[in-house]
Image (cartoon, rainbow, N blue to C red; front, side, top):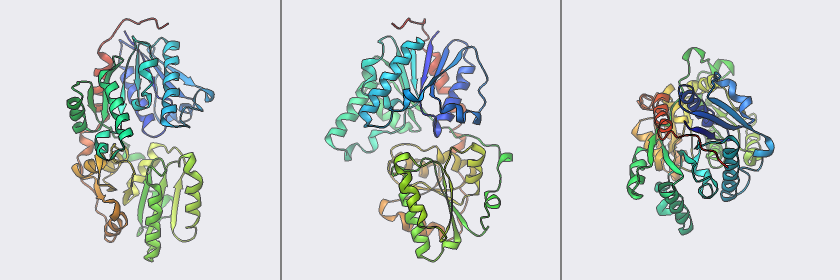
Length: 390
């Protein structure tokens, strides 16, 4: 029997969904014990799912004092703090295995801090292969060092590559390894009977096109570029033809700028802001009522959970043409892509006519069951006798 620590203090965005998927895997596992290490924020959003009590599952809630300095500095400092906290919790709960929902944040320090008999696995989202040729020498060195640890360090078991089968094969080939394993980015089915009409609820004229920008709002997520689209619509004298919706929270360092920009458009165009962690029925309703989902990410070498919602409701996305993002949109026919210099022009061309629904098979191959099968296999392997961690 293993004692498996699920380590992911944050619960925003997809992390809560992943916690629940893992909880379902743990609920049906009679051979292992699980400890979910989460922040107190979990208590505020956990009612979005059901968490039936199980004898083999426990929670370790992190206090504000334990988490307040985790993610406020450089990535190197954050990694050290996260690894140090994880190691302390491992010893506290006598875990024999650790699963990181976001594995990259543990490097480079965890291999040097974690007790030698403890195995670690987790999920990687951002794949360096897409940007390696354009990186600085120092950044290339960092990436090579991280993947050297993943492929060679004895603490790592399986490294799950999110939604990128091509990169999984490439990484195993490059590093002469079999540790890298493909895992889908699962979409969350939303009961169509719980969907309501956002147009009616918020008095959006049926003739208006609804443009949605969702998820975390930040410079990294390209939120500023949405203001360029609003400027374009107003410049063309078509403000009455659109409603822009921002669904999700702006990150703290971006919040002032976000609301300063929005204030400029008061009385000029209809804009709705949902600055909160949205329940899934409301988010699904917003997606279902939208005509186009615009996600101009700055980083394209990772997947996006939003495309699962887009495919579910057959609403096209507009995303960059590079990296993993561009490949997924094209391969699964989820919407439109653009080159950096043609963002506004591509948007203008799309909205100049009626926007057709998409017809994608993405949801057929990206289910929660596909996701859980990989985790079930991972957690059932290498079961060991619980080792006393001193």
